[in-house]
Length: 87
Image (cartoon, rainbow, N blue to C red; front, side, top):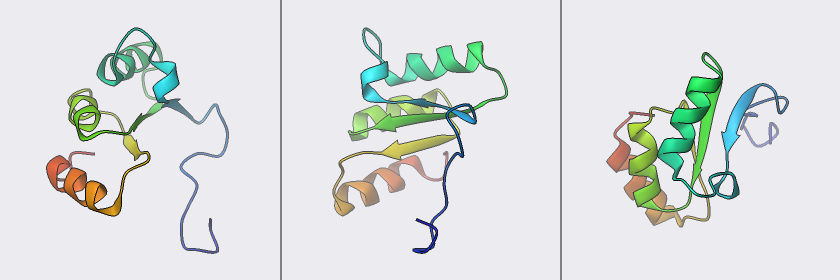
């Protein structure tokens, strides 16, 4: 990762809350982010999204990061344009 110019978004599981799609059973990514923020105030919150609709929902909950999963480069460009720097 670092050799390619990237960086780790966290060093350990306790550095941030990462909400993956299999963590949100019975709710949605927005609600999961809100619940994590309430439970762990001040902790970095990351939400994983695999659709543009999930991204829009997640942005409304103000996560620190959104991880885009299984999207084509075109889908990523469209989502980034939609988010307009909000995350």
